[in-house]
Length: 295
Image (cartoon, rainbow, N blue to C red; front, side):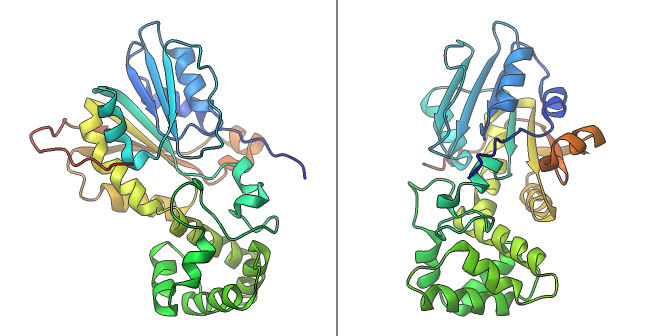
């Protein structure tokens, strides 16, 4: 199998919208291939710092010899907790990329995609919770139906839930390709239906809406007043998650939404549906006791 290397999206746009102080502190909440962290370090002065996190335990962080950089494995839902443990406060900016990387999607053993047959696991961090297949086995039709809807599946949700339950429970070993085939049969646009179902299943397996809400809730306490939170999304579901998460975030204001250039889309297909949401903190809500999310 050919190894697919991931290319970070909208690197220049992230730097342009995040970097407000060359001596500041910046958090890369989803390190991935390291494109955003590397670009930020390249623009910072000697007093600037970048702290990177990623919940994917297979990620290997680069540039660890740079005294301005630090990194560790953690989910951004625990961002405030991890920073407070290290006595780090007052970040100038945070960037979070909500997309799955090409490297992850093309790793069959992760089961994140139907591109290659693999186990129905779908966890980005396999050290937490259980594989999705086990959770589905213990789930009733009504619960799975509701979960698919909550995680953005817009097709024939009940029929899809029934097909997924049936095929997972019937076969001794069910692959991602089996689930994709079952969902393809539900609509004339079969591949679109399969892609939609897999995105919803990945979101379920990794508690994506809950993690994003936690990040948005913690961001004003992590950021300096005027600090920025940048969130990269890759589909309409991601956009809806961002809107829902910031709806009740009184200390965050959406400044702008930035689309990739046509040149980047032509050279990097992964950028095609991406959007960069730029939010600004209006003040640090330390008057309220912080609610840490422990890892």
